[in-house]
Amino acid sequence: MKKFLAVSALMTSLALTGCATTGTGTDAGNAVGTATNMGMSIFKTAVDAQCRSELEKQNAWRIARVAMNSEQEEVAKTKICGCVSEQAPQQVTVVDMTNAAIDPQYRAQLVTKVVAKSLQTCYASFTK
Image 1: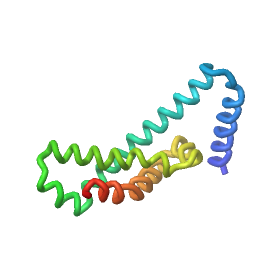
Image 2: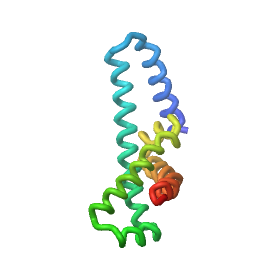
Image 3: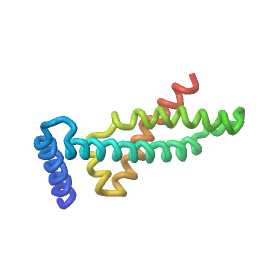
Image 4: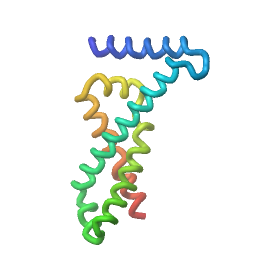
């Protein structure tokens, strides 16, 4: 119940900030946009790190990387996990992001869920 109240309060304050910032270029409007961008950037970074960790556990990846040198392996990881990171924002809601900002355990679960949904698709598109 406390989480719900905290999320509700945060969402209300964001909504009211949006209403209060009718002009373009206002400090409050820029602050909300900056906070949103920073939150998404942090989320994408966490997704990328989780993706790289999960990729190392994949049998198909272990086999594929035998034929690669370290530079090729890094390029492939960057492409695959870049794909996963780009798909991540499309798989989360504002409520998910708000809960992730408040609760580190929820954040870890959300990142794991997002990576699990996208990793196979991105890996398959890379190997085509």
